[in-house]
Length: 92
Image 1 (cartoon, rainbow, N blue to C red):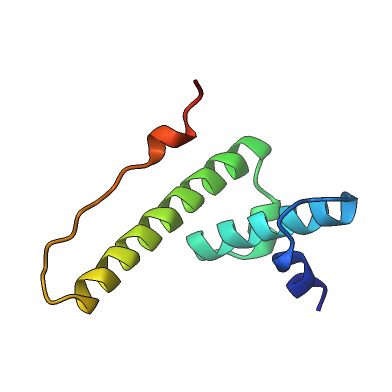
Image 2 (cartoon, one colour; image 1 turned 120 degrees about the horizontal axis):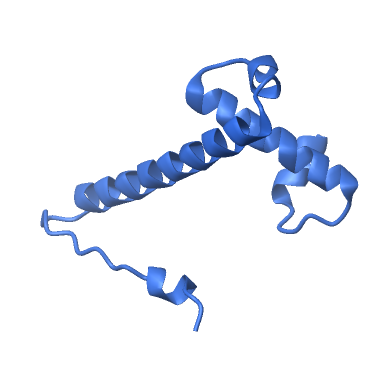
């Protein structure tokens, strides 16, 4: 129940939310590398941060590929045009 409520939130508002976010990051790393949460908690901070970065990046690439595949499957044409909006995230 507490996890579902946390996942619906868009902003970390208190220490409890921060704790839940850290648990979520640990879960993401454990799931990505197919290891236990205990093994994740034994990682050094540097290894954890690097592992989390890779896991999040790979998950995002998989989401993009899945979205592209869904588009290809739902259209008669196999032409898919990629739009790169990453320039919007850059600083002025």
